[in-house]
Amino acid sequence: MTNPETRLKTLTMKFGGTSLGTAEAIGQSAEIAKAARDHTADRIAVVASAVHGVTDALQEATTAAAGGDERYLQIIAELRDLHRGCAEALAEQESEVVVAEIDELLEGFAGFCESVSVLAEAGPRALDHAMSLGEQMSVILLAAFLRQIGVAAIAVNATDIIVTDDRFQDAAPLLEATRRKAVENLVPILERGQTPVITGFIGATPDGITTTLGRGGSDFSAGLIAACLESDELWIWTDVDGVMTADPKVVRSARTIETLGYQEVRELSYFGAKVLHPKTIQSVFDTEIPIRVKNTFNPSHAGTFIIPDLNESNGAIKAITAVPNVSLITVEGKGMMGVPGIAARTFDGVARTGASVLLISQASSEQSICFAVPRANAPAAVEALEFEFELALSRGDIDRVWAQDDITIVTVVGSGMRQTAGVAGQVFTATGRQGINVVAIAQGSSECSISLVVQDRDGDDAVRAIHELVIED
Ligand code: ADP
Ligand code: ASP
Ligand code: MG
Image 1 (spheres, rainbow, N blue to C red):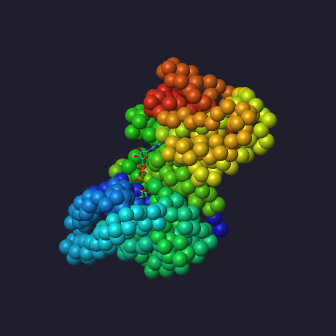
Image 2: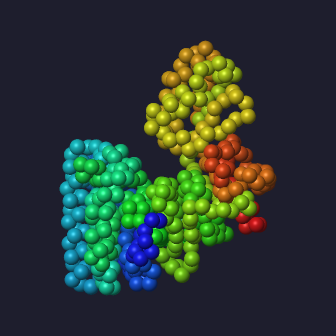
Image 3: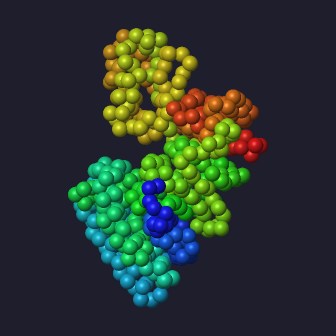
């Protein structure tokens, strides 16, 4: 960091949907933010997700409306009750204002759904408009809860902060424009001694059209804002005691990992650890801001501390993650060696379908190329490759292009692990003991992970079996 030592200490903290699920949880989140402002930092910027389940409900209502199903009215009524229920815990005057603001947003949404039902379609742009409402409502609530305990908080819509391209549903931030807006619109609030409560997940194109950063994207928003404000730290508040050795919902004996390096977290989140959005590290990478992941419902627990470089080379496995619902696509044939540029053409062909390749598996023979894509993308990918290799297929140089569905990628992560002899062996012994068939292996480009491909039905068992190696350590 280039700032002089006299500068004010700034913290950015993000509260996830689970930390905002009820009036009690919102109150708890507000207390946590206030305590940080009173005791840890000179100023804080708060980023909030939608109240738990709201983004899904907004998506469902919009899709129902597009299909001519009036169920959207019911969903809107439930959303109104949910937010009103949370606002009831506020003092009467504040509660009335909050309810009026949220009602206005939901009335707008009802009108929007009506138009969608007339048009009978809702594309990505319309969905972004709808799905951005959850965060717009939650920041109104959280800011009011903060004011109630004496923090001068104001709700801020990230459409005024985060500038993105127009890839609706998965927009990418334009960094320079975002930095300018953040400095222009957030710094004055902080300088007035106020606390901005900013919508996670959403942004806007340079023309001001609302976009979203992809599901779970509030962590990414918080990283972007932390970077723009040159925050000293980024704190992610969630519903578990930090980043754990495995998803605690799958492995009951999962434990908190005290420290992790950026690279390890990147691998973990990319390969399925939902606790942090995969792009969070990317957003703080250049500024090297340390991250803490902590539990809103157990705030005295230290959680996990994430730093840019972790000089550890004990080679131990630190965590195991899983990505289910993947397809493994294989291009195979004995004459493949003779087909010019086959690997490049394969991946170009897949890229043109918009599918992202999650992993490439190196087969021992040169007679096949094998890679994984999300299951929903598999049919289009196979079709694109059959088209690309039409000639080679007709000549018999390539025998077939085929997809194996119902696949889970299980990944073991630990810095320095790959240089340590025997880790892969231990992993295969552990899965073998359980009779789990490993369909393929991938040693990614990163030094700190090894992935195995198993059938979906073996996914949880594979994670549990390998997790035993962490516990034994
Ligand atoms: P939030 O609403 O706070 O963003 P999420 O549901 O997105 O919360 O992420 C937290 C969840 O991530 C946890 O409840 C947990 O089930 C899941 N999770 C998956 N893998 C891990 C892991 N390795 N460590 C911690 N949590 C994990
Ligand atoms: N509310 C958004 C979602 O449910 C973003 C987030 O929770 O991070 O995907
Ligand atoms: Mg999340």
